Length: 344
Ligand SMILES: [Fe+2]
Ligand SMILES: [Fe+2]
Image (cartoon, rainbow, N blue to C red; front, side, top):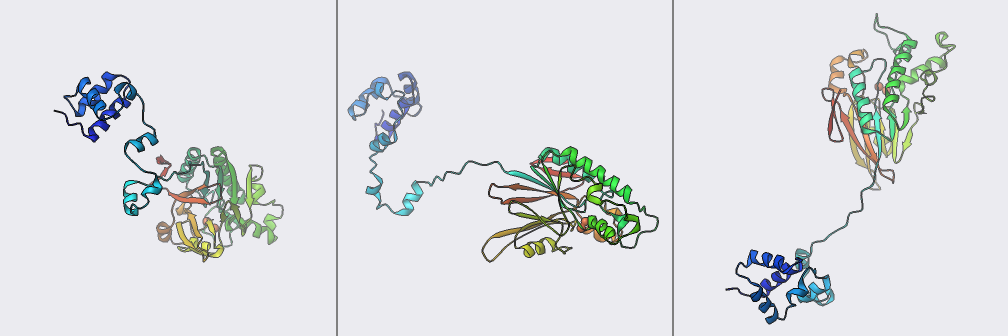
C-alpha cells in the first residue's frame, strides 16, 4: 500500500523530471516505492492535481516554479522570520574572484665566491630552473674579496684578486645559465671592499677597472644596485644590509624602513612580522647564505655552525605590488619547492 503524501508526490515528480522516458522514471520511483506501477502513479498525480507524467518528463523546474510548488512567498513577506533561522537554512555563498597569476621572485643570498658551498649553489640553480622566477635577485656578498680585506689574514691562505674574480665569474655563469627572467644584484660590503681599495689609491689597484666591470655584470644583464642603496620591487625594499648583523637583523631592517624589506648579510634565515601605527602589516626577511662555512676565519666555527643556514628565498608578487615571501632552507642539501623535493 502506497501512501501518497505530499513528500512522496514531490519525489515522484522529481523522478520524472530527471528522466527522459516513463520507464526510466518508474525505475527511479521504485527505488523508494517498490510497489508503484504506472496506473497507481497516474491516478495519484491526477487525484492530487499534479501534472501528468508526459508533461513532467525531462523538464527541470525553474526557481519560480519550485517556489510556487513549495508555497514559498516573496522574501519581503517572510522578513519576519528570525535571522538565526534564515542563516541556518540559507547558507551564505560568497563568490571568490578568479585567481590571478603572481609574478615570481627568487632571492639568492650571500655566496662569498670563490668560497661558495658548491653543492648548495648547484641546488640553488636547480631550483631556479624549476621555479622560473620573473625576477632573480642576488642580495650581495656574491664575491668574498678576501684578497682586499683589511682583516688579518690566515697564514698560508691564497690571496689573489684575479683568482677570486675568476671564481665569482664561474658562479655567475651558473646563475646566468639557469635563469631566464630579469636579474638584479644589490652589492654588499664584501664587493665594497674593492671600491675602498681603489679609493685608497692602493698601488696594486692603480689600473683596476672595478669589480662590477671585472664581473661583467652589466654585460650579463644584471641590474646593479650599489652598496648602501636599495632596490624596490613592487612594495618590497631589497638591500644588502642596513648596518645590523645577528639574530634581530631582519626585524631591525623592517623597523628601520617601516616597510617590507629583504636583506642579505646575516647568513641566517629570518622572518619578522610586525606593523606600523597606520595598521599596515610589514615583513622583514633574510634568506640564509650559499657560502662554505669552513672558509670563514673571522668568526668561531662553532658559532657559524649554529647560525648560518644554507638556503634561498622566494616571493610571489600581486598586481598591487604586495609580495608574499618564503624562506627555503636547504636540509641535508634537499629543498622543497612548489611541493616537490629537489635534491642537490
Ligand atoms: Fe655575507
Ligand atoms: Fe655582508
